[in-house]
Image (cartoon, rainbow, N blue to C red):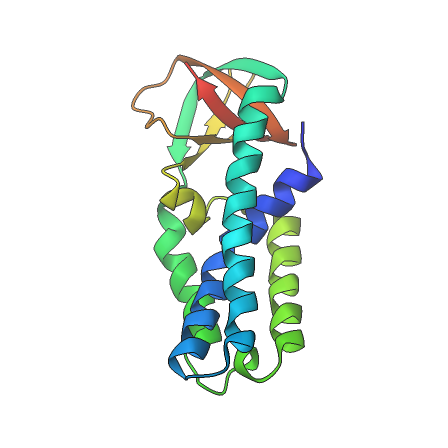
Length: 175
């Protein structure tokens, strides 16, 4: 189990589109590359680290199996996430990200901490781009879990092989 590190990467990578948008805005405003290259590098690094964490966990973490008796797809909120978080931060040219990188970093860290504490991992646009889906599932014991999978579930009763990323967060690694 990767626990805190996996949670941090899942939350942080969900904010990488904000960093990319800040870089694009600064670039389009013809600011020096030092003002936007760091934001772009951070966005790409978070995506890469998240992907590497998923690959590592799938190959090395302890496997668990459980039967899905109930599921609900929960990743439809990607568009709402993009509208709620991305647009307000980057819509104004005089926004906090454009004036001072410390203010932008503080805002992002605050969002990461809030999302991580609340445990809302199911609106990660990066995971959507990597073709992963988030499901709220109940196992045969009635315990609710978050399941991250590239498989689209269509019926209950499936026995799934997973690895545990964090408390109540599992990555589907096969049938």
